[in-house]
Amino acid sequence: MMLRDKVVVVAGVGAGLGRSIALASAREGADVVLAARTASTLEEVAKEVTALGRRGLAVPTDLGDAEAAGQLAQAARAEFGRVDALVYNALAMPPIKALAKVPLESLTESFDGNVVAALRLTRLFVPVLADAQGSVVMINSMVVRFSQVGMGPYKLAKAALLAMAQSLATELGPQGIRVNSVAPGHIWGDSLKWYFGYLARKRGVSVEDIYRETAAGIDLGRLPEPDEIADAAVFLASPLARAITGQCLDVNCGEYHH
Image (cartoon, rainbow, N blue to C red; front, side, top):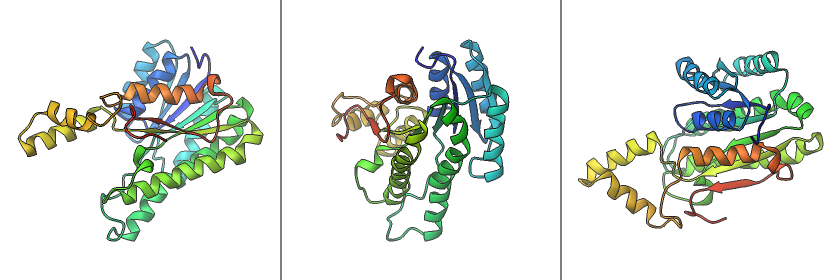
């Protein structure tokens, strides 16, 4: 029960990692505020949180909208009176194109959707996080650990998100707020399973073949699953990580070392 009677806001709750983070928080004793654009998904996850014996508050939110983000912060304070952790899991995926060719307006949209939105929401929660001596966890990506043609726009956005989290750790530390990041590797969830299925059909091989090829160069010989990423986020949000701030924890089964 690392988060017993804490309140965790999970921004960016989908059927994959966001759901896993919300449920991991509830299993560790936290009430959870759930934010994303799809109300039906939020309600489903809220029911799962309730089934674990904790309170789940669904707040449909377009995190890229300043007014909606402000309403989310108000709703969390009104319902629970405190917030102990903010986990930012939202992603605005930029085009998979070379930086030399990608439209510049796409980079602006990606930066606004990933970095500015995360900063805006964090700033809104600073007062309550300071009261609770709480923490912020930014979900990043292992893309910051390598360079690959086509992934430049994504790496640019995530590298900026990492720099922002580290700077916020320095700025907010005097208020007792910790800010850390989690950098997942390939996450063996529905999206990746669909993509591996697409690759398998295209090449005339099995999904298992694609998985084995991908996992062959990874230290543990497998891909991390959503619950394993979620556990890392919960750890960083918990008192067990009370002396950790400004760090990025890689959760990639050893695909990259940092």
